Amino acid sequence: MQLSLPFGFPRFFTSLPSVASTTRISVATWGIALWLATVGNLPLWQRIEALGGSPAHRLALILGLVAVLTGAIAVLLSLAAWPRVFRAVASALLLVAAFNTHFMWQYGVVIDPTMLANVVHTDAREVRDLLSWSLPGTVLLVSGLPLWALWRKPLALRRAGPQAGHNLAHALAAFALLVLAAMLSYQGLASLMRNHKDLRYMANPLNTVYAGARLAVDQLPRQVRPLQPVGEDAALGASYAHQARPPLLVLVIGETARAQNFGLNGYGRNTTPALARWQAQGDLVNFSDVRSCGTNTQVSLPCIFSPLTRTQGGNKPAEHENLLDVLQRAGLAVLWVDNQSGCKGVCDRVPHGFASDHALPGLCDGSECLDGAMLDGLDQRIAALDPQRRARGVVVVLHQMGSHGPAYAHRAPADRKPFLPECTSVTLSDCPHEQLVNAYDNSIAYTDHFLDQTLQWLKARAERGTEDTGLVYVSDHGESLGENGLYLHGVPYAIAPEQQTRVPMVAWFSQGLQRRNGLSMKCLREQATGPVSHDNIFHSVLGLMDVQTRSHQLALDALTPCSAASQAQVRTNPLFSG
Image (tube, rainbow, N blue to C red; front, side, top):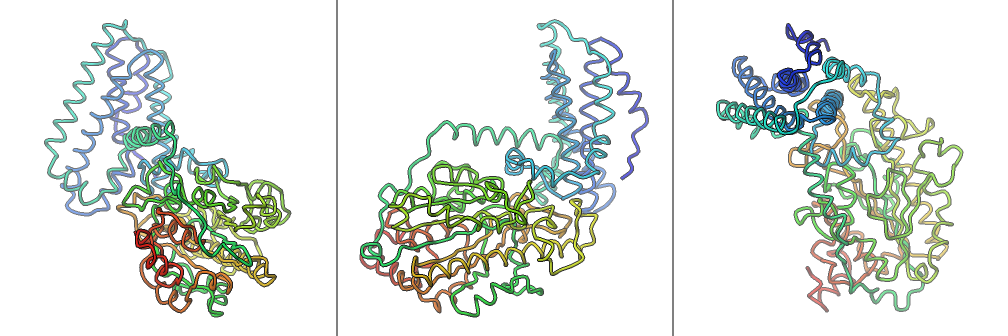
């Protein structure tokens, strides 16, 4: 994209550091604020232009927002006009705006607290996948000239007392501009922000300043408080008294799989041929209307295991113990195997490991592993668990790499890519849409293969008579593939498209586990067409594993209508009905 700079901008900035007067410091403050409000918000202006309407109306909106943003940024910079502070703060704001601009241009993302939390928890592999040659170009375009001018020569400041008064005066002037501009533009801006909520998270760099402050307020206090216990009364139910075989449940947490590209949900391509064969055999159930708790892993993964529903705060930073704590407290063995960037605190108090703990030729290339690596050595990982707990029952969580973008082409091996040619670039907007979909669908097809391998492993153990086995698979969130200009995920939930919130989910139970719980598969298949969400996972797993606790709400247990054991629990102890 070519950018024509307003006349005088280069001379304006290059003159800032060349003198040492406080007047020039003031000019630097206002100049950088104006630069950030204009050049630093190119994606915002493009978005407003795309909304349509009369040119005069759009121009009035843009001018009003420029004035508001200039005033707000000038307030921040005026308060930061101190030795060893001003240039660091100004540089940080310029670089933040530049990086935000790149990712908003490339993927259509917006910057809110959950997106910033994702950034904070991003690992080196994810950073590598997001790097492209266009990134330094955008950073140079948005921040290069003002950074050069800012650091070209020292900027002189007054002594502490006079400088404080000077800073306060300019902060008040900037605030007055903000208020005046907001009042003059109120009607248009209020309507704009009310009808297009995503614009609130596109205002650079204030979006990041707000998100950072909100993240600190939400998360820091929770990190110094102990988690509230859950299920302190947890105990194993009657099915364990004289069991012939212990239960073994594998809970597969998918990554970035969206329901509409899942073959079992009627997608035009058969991306799930193996699961379709298992479904035809009668023991696999597909849940066709499932909603996620969030639009990113940082929110959804803890929420899946939370005792709280989304509306109760399950999508907030955890204040309570989770499902794995309750299962372990009841006496079961619990194991977490991760092929992602970690469990986001969910597995901190149970045995856990990574797929990459041992390099596996053909499955791990040194920097990341295919999901199949989690099955290699899984028998040995389970055998290493506490034998007394293992004798009662085991719950294993496999956290997939799945369809994590933007490097979809890395999510499946070369011999398991049925849809070609595929997009191999991380700059998704540069790929033909058909090739982008091919790469994504190949990742879904590999998830189908991985689930098939896991089911074969579980079926073999059931046939040997060692355990009553079962599997539940659900994705953490979905993905956008260019619809409405959006890529990847992480859009604020209130405005997120269905592609990011509707996810696939399947369940398979061996004959032994069906008998153990009195499960009617015919009933479950009928129930599976109704709405389900991440809110149901905590309670459904407790019911499936027959863990008795008042934390188990049968109303949120998706298996309750089809489980004789759960129905008996309702009849004998209505307190557990939720």
